[in-house]
Length: 106
Image (cartoon, rainbow, N blue to C red; front, side):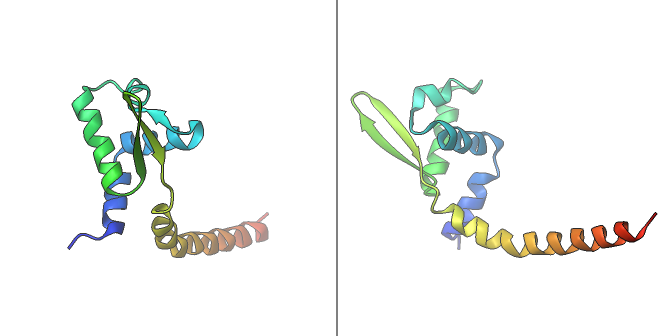
């Protein structure tokens, strides 16, 4: 059974979708045509990437006139952060140990 967290991780697996999220984070809400213009792919293929992001709750869509405006919804990324935190601690401890070893060397 697929969970919301599974959908978020699956959405983040694609470099195209990660780039879309980055663009929305850095540049704010954007029309689909503007987002699609940054990628060399057919519009239906790009729309599929947006659908995956919507299904994961990572973006929302709003109609403004004839345009569809996409916006980042970062709350689902909290699950990713929680999952990664133990690994961050793991590597921080390992790197601290490496620093200690290197500090004792000439």
